[in-house]
Length: 513
Image 1 (cartoon, rainbow, N blue to C red):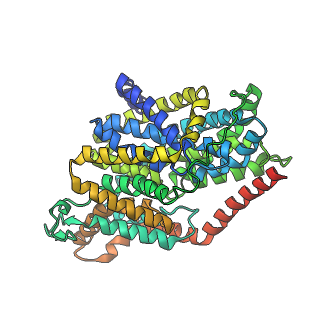
Image 2: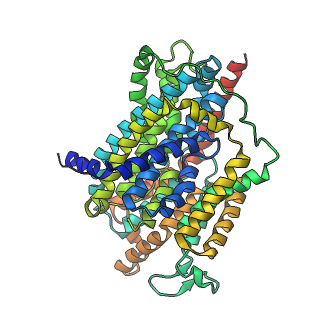
Image 3: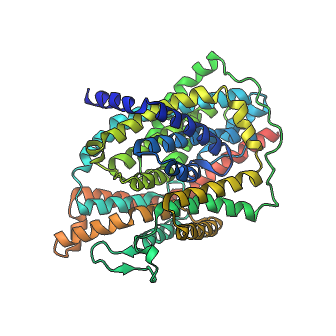
């Protein structure tokens, strides 16, 4: 009853005209961001962070806007997957397998609408999972001391590459680079400047919002500039949508698939480092083994669209659980959202639910509202969103650059921060060319100081005994999970990625035949 009462209070906070309009705006912009191949939820949220701060929004409205962008981008990723066979991001790869064949059969509208319904079911059930699971995690988190928090942060870094990662060395390098960037500035315990090189602007450290916008948004602009003579207008071919609404019998036949894969996706989202990619993959493969008796998966089976869409949207909701309850992001996009929370002077973790319940429950209520808005918006506006694919990058990228520069200058009023942002943009461009993940850098910048402070506190309390880091059952469990999470991708990562690509090639071959 207490949970339902808190949720009702959240709806009172969320159901204001301002918050409803922000949720609608976030859903619309997020869907557009997700529809554009290559951007995805992480980039979409990062690009629009400056907008939230430039508008001078408070904590709850800012989070409502950006989480609506998050959910909208998860919906939007399916559009290019189904119509062009180009996944908007990695989790949308599995949607290509049956979505594109459906489009080639003249059923693109049905595939898009069905994926919208499946996304709604996955995200709706995951939000209920967040309500039920996060408060229980909070009770466990209250047992944490400095040593346990240090082990928890190590777990976050060790598993952030995800189960589908094939190069843990690059992930470790990115995390180390992020932790190194977190040490820039005045040491909070000794008052000594570190790595500032005499630059007064660096005494407060590197602003992680500047780092995020540079690494994600500006690096995308630099990649476009590099390939501007390539496929800038590759998406300008006319796409046919066909019938918009799937039949009732089709929805009924896909309902068990949506329910099963929503549960699988949510579990994958809550687990550290699993994320939407694994949620999408295991949902599709599990459902194929369970119901594909006639070999129709990969040839335009609607259940092959419903399964990965429900799975990856449920995983997106599941990733919010460890972020809100423990302060540890479960995915790349939630790492960006964590930066927003910290920039708003909100510290996620066990005390968030008791000290700032209006923020938590207002956000959860807004997730429900955003889900219904997306369902109501996506089906009638499919025609409009497909036209987004016709926007040439030569028009889109200058807009991204303008939003980035104006937004960051509006937040800080410092031209030095603009130079730092450009530097991070170049760094992001180089790292993306080298296939080094960017999210561990952001996580290191965000959590580096907290990790260092907890390590110092634990060692100080134990009078310099380093064994204090492993002397409790909870810390031992976290260290074990960190080691397993780091080693597992080395063993299974290549196999998992190879299977995903193999399934994609099989599908393309069957379509050509």
